[in-house]
Image 1: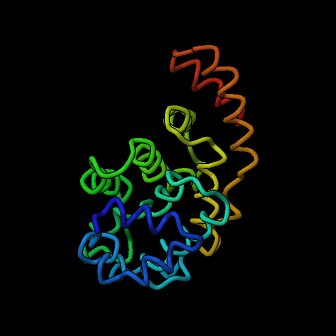
Image 2 (image 1 turned 45 degrees about the vertical axis):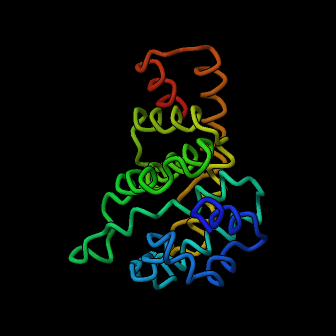
Amino acid sequence: MNLKDFIINALSSKKPSLYFKNNEDVGKEIFPELYKLKAVPESEDYHYHDNTFDHVMMVVDEVAKKTNKLNIRYAALMHDIGKVETKEEILPHHYEHEKKGVDKLYKIASDKLSDQSIDSAAVVIRYHMMIKNWNELRPGTIVDMFNAIYDSPLSMEEFLIIIRADNLKKKNQEKNIPHEEISRIYNDYVKEIKQKNIEDRNKQSLFIANKK
């Protein structure tokens, strides 16, 4: 079995975590990065899971309850893949795992999965931590995130499905993310900025500043 078939088989199942766990021997050979997350601890300040693998499995299963779309499930699977690169001396913190995750994604997925799946995963990896600090984000940062989501295969609601799952069992996290506000501002941004082809960054940022 190759990596592409392994991932598609897992993510096409009703509960992907069962496939990944029941086929661990094969998975460790063709997708070692995923299973190495078992040895990567999570911070007790934020997580109820002991390791990143268990957290990722929970996220994928929760997303699978909401959508059958492979690209969204794949983005959920890969959202924390950068944590495999965390140096031992800074554990349980995972600084810059978003950037490391995007780099790791392209090394793993190049020519193995659809562009739709890879592009979806890249956006989620890059911005899944940022959106948790929504209330502190500068307008220009929100513009970057909104533009990236708009240009990706994901809708905002699909992006937020993963964000909700990622924060489902984290301590004191979910309450800090105003999903309805984010969706409302994003939809207004698409209607008033993107669909009117307003490319001036200052105007884009000002629009966000006036909405928050």
